[in-house]
Image (cartoon, rainbow, N blue to C red; front, side, top):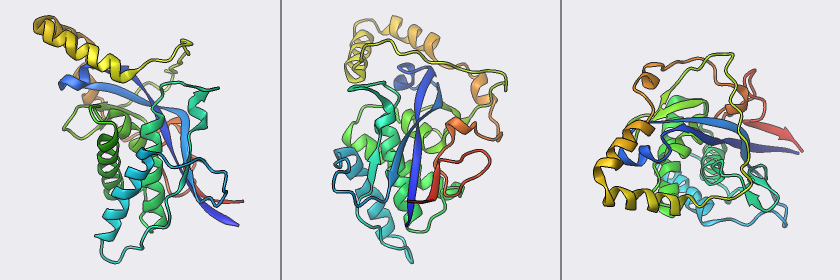
Length: 246
């Protein structure tokens, strides 16, 4: 049996995780943990979440308004198991990756090529709208990274910019062993800004990615472990999106 599977990577902020909320630029990189959306008729498949349902609703509306486009099938199943250590989430953007995978799956299912830049732009818009609808308050950088892959310089309200890094550079991440509540951290940062606007502005400047990051834009191939959703296997990605034998 042949089935369609689409995956999207998680993310890690290299700099600017909170500064980006104030309009500064963040540097974000995709990581090798992926959410996988696949055709699945298994009755034990993971249940839909508000996020995946929102992603499906947005892509379904887009497809219904697109002339000559195949209507989407039922909401796909999404596996985000690689984003957890036991029962604890690792904080690598599983929600954004799940939304990107669902959007990518149903666009590919309808015959759209995820490698097409125009399709990728649509996928980013739909995924960000769905993610903001359910979670709100975030910058959207994690969603952009899940859709586009690679390393990007992200500023709210602007197009993400791909960033090159030296081929010899390898970034490692270590689990601190304790979960973090991003929403509460964001609230604390904003509260600090209200208490001391001058200190907040100075800290935001110091914690933002430098302008040189955007100047390092490149069209270099995306690293394999950080590949964005893709409709066909390629030398740079073998797991992004493929029709797999099952």
